[in-house]
Image: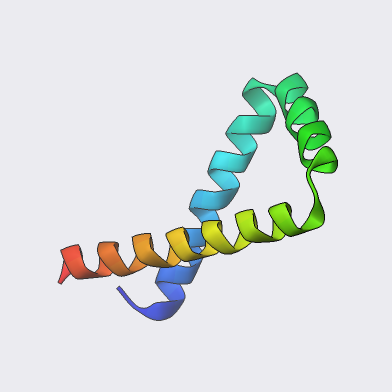
Length: 67
């Protein structure tokens, strides 16, 4: 799978999961946003870095398994 196709696939997967979360539990999204607002900025930054690192690891694993 080419780089562009992989990028489009990744964006599609993110949009699908985000859309399902908003469609199935809109009130829970508000609760999560309130929780995130109460967290210190440094904690939110660390969560973002951890999520990005996990995402990269999963992409690497997927590419390794497809080879």
